[in-house]
Image 1: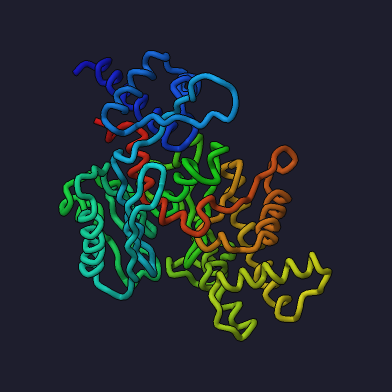
Image 2: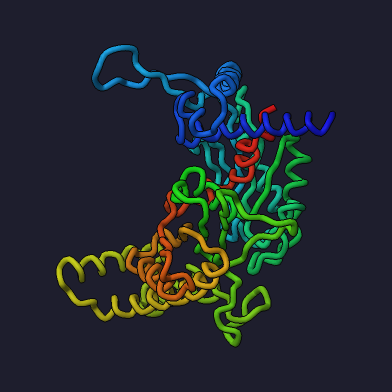
Length: 403
């Protein structure tokens, strides 16, 4: 095929993927909107839309007209018959396998704990869950399988490298093994990257082109969206905010470095500190909710913090200071519009995220000219679970899996 033929084919794929993305993410609902948003000719849009209608990916539904006369307007939407997405989210404590549609409606979810099993046992458990998902499909089509995994990872090789505190598991060729077993397209990325791109498509990042997603759990992950697309380079490696050192003489991290951010603000570490400060065995989320109530009482009822709340407040305030220290460096390097906090970080009381926002905006080098927002994930604490199909969905929206 000539070079112009290849270019034309790629252009057609991208146009089809773009139109599918605009309908799936709710940015457009009519042919006119699609033409205006994409700049494509009306005839081109009509041709692609009709193709999707015929293949059962789109369907037309009448909008309810509130007032006025005439025909009810018709809107385009994703059909229930459209191919679905399978996702695998692999983290330290738990693995989830999900089936969802292109609008991220969760159709089925199977989760199991991850313990000190061998690599082969872990893969066997993942495949058992995938088998259960596949068995429910009947005649339904799927675009493929997306995997979002604990890092560090090599995206190019589809491999989980050597995550700290991951039971000694390393160099897991998860993409190859799943491809060989299920004979369908498999797309792989770090869990925070997957969550970040889902925030762009459907969540708290839909209104901006450049942001940092921060995944705070038993570790601290991050994903970067730059110019509306997930940041990546030729190395295949992902961004590791959690292993940014904030104290070069600090605590030894599992990665071999000292003073890594995640040694100070991971949810499990904060949970332990809060338990020691209060004498209670609550979870991190429960402590966050308790602190929220204490803040509300102090502000609405003009009550001073109890001694218990003061101790908890000190821990949360130190967390905010350490997080803002690391984020300021990232902001100076990347100049994002927004920082999105997700996973268990979603439960951190607003007061402390406002503190993070204030400190970042007091410290970053362009503070006189621009302000950075700090907001919570649009998926509550499940951005990484919904996001595990992110690499797969990106391939769909790029047109690579549309025939």
